[in-house]
Amino acid sequence: MEKRTSANIKDVAALANVSTATVSRYLNGNLARMSTATAERVKDAIEKLKYVPNSAARQMITKSSQLVALIVANTDDYFSTELFKGISSILETSGYVATMFDSDSDIHREQSLLATVNRHTFDALIVQPFSSPAEITDIMRRDIPIVIVDRETPGSPWPQVVTNNFEAAREATTYFVDQGYTHFIVLTSELDAATNRRERYRGILAAASHVDVVEVSESSYNHKAVHQQLTTLLTASNERTVIFALKERWLLEFVPNLVLQGYLDNTRATATASPIPARRGAWSRA
Image (cartoon, rainbow, N blue to C red; front, side, top):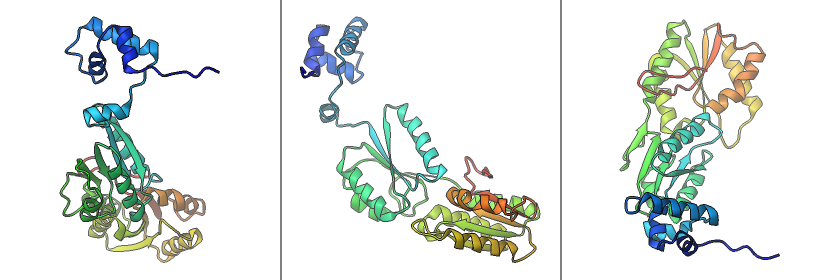
């Protein structure tokens, strides 16, 4: 079988009857320096030859890959995937493509991914971090823009896009207090691992007087033991109770069985997801 060869930029230039510099300008979007007719000939030549530009060569010339690395905390969480979708849509309007990495809620994996980003030609980094600014700086030796998202990071030298976690959680808790609920069970991953969780927990404490915490390890946990802990707390008193899940994964993992077994009836006991404010005072309820 005859081996099929790929067209190169010289082939495109020859078919379009232009210089390779003109083809290069067309590929980089610099159309101001050529006529509409010339641009059409280059476009037709590219299509006829099925020419695919050499991205590595283009990066050497432009010093840009048009790729942005996004490291999210855990793709098991609805919030992380929505974060990727939102960031991608914004970047694409400026000609950039987001590449998502999942740290799986593991600081060591996150730091390994940071090292990977540092070794490759990403134009920027967006991170939902567990690591401190000092740790990120130590790993990221390349001078690229960095943006922190979701988790307010004290001492960060980079821009941060964060939500009002404390205020949203306080307002959500106040809503339930006004409805007559007095007991709150905070269902969460390790509170110490992420600032956004700690801020939401503080917001709940600011509005409620009776708060219990059930922490679930993301690396290893006993489903039966967690379920038993929740049922014990739900039946320990006659107070109207809210399970406040600071992680969507745990809401989906544990709440359905509690509903099926009659522990949650939306009257004596109910459950809500972590508040995700789109603006000050807004939150979402499951």
